[in-house]
Image (cartoon, rainbow, N blue to C red; front, side, top):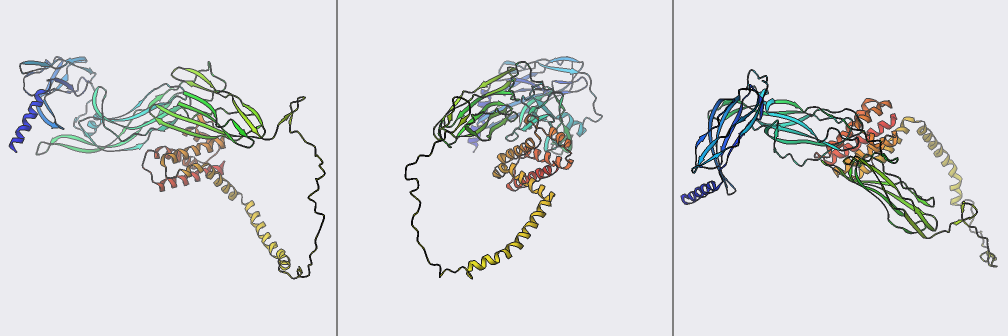
Length: 587
């Protein structure tokens, strides 16, 4: 055993000595008040250092130190060594101050650190007790909202990220969001975060650990000064008390404190009027456009599908697709909408497709005119219009469509009846007779059934008529049944997705939006929680029903990224159905 320990020590020593010597300087903060203190630590990563020389702390007053510490470890076969010298200093004046280089000798060679710059500002108000836990927590924890762009175009996607910065001086034991941020005036979608990995970063020039708590994609739906309300949190913090126990360990005290992120102001810009196409419907981003036909050679009454698709990155959920026009000889049905979109920190990407089913009635060749789609590219600040090719459908079998050359009316050619001499060959000229002596209708079973049938049918008819009259007079009940039927219609897609969390909540949110668009004629670009509330209030909907509708929308946003059971999804489905029923009764 002693032999193995000796080998391990030898390898550790050889590995440490093999490292290139480096002396580094690290400060606890780069900005501070002239009446505050900071900690500077000089670290050498190789053994054998001697004759450490601190810098000449010009413009600084040394309050404490130096204190020394040595650490040595072997992790995954990799050895590390660190020897540090720490000072507590305070600036003597305001301005940009430089802490000079420290030096140390290793194997006859002098190693120097890099100078460090510190900015001393006006004196700040210090607490009477610097060990006050609330003061320490306030100085060491920061809840920050970072916005990717403060002045986007209307319809252009930006994102907001909420970060919690925590210094290495304290510990966080529990966090809970007490008030989520509000995005009034924005279409918004939370971005899924895989776990909460701890990262290293700087806040106000100081080193902090931080985690990303929440991230959301925002698309402004109007111009003006839009405010993003703060996120509020309760955090349980372990704060050092400045005292130590019998073994020299620092004693900490747990406190609960509320933090709030600063309010953010976004000022969206109006889309330019210059060069705006007439068919522009609000598409903002970078898109591709295509119109395709599944079959171009058909028989009469055989169907084909026209697929109109927009793909790319941008506000795919917030604009209308152009409509395909077809000749009258091609019967066209209402399109089926399909959306395959994903939301990331870079925006919305994917595709939106309308599929039309067409059925020809007559033989012939028909032209489907080209379709135009326009969008605005915010990076290039320019409108673009994309056009599809003309499509042709060739119907090779079916009824002939004869066109009169003297006028434009289209009619089917009539044919005269031709006499062949055999037109009446199927008329029977002979007959046979059969005796009815054994088939007397009087007193037969059928006779008695027909005799008593009116006596039974009349009371039943009276009862059914009364029930039908009562049902017709039941205005409230009829409205309720109609509303329930309407709710089932809009929520049918969501019901199919029960058990599939993300697909279910996307279908649920889409159903609520589609109901409002169909019932109130709201444009897609105007759909936001604030706009919904204003419109429903103008329709004299009671506040309880409005709040329930908004709650379901909010639940759909948050539930996609939290663990949800099938039972909870079924309960959410029933709640959405009742909300639509209540709204429809009042509307």
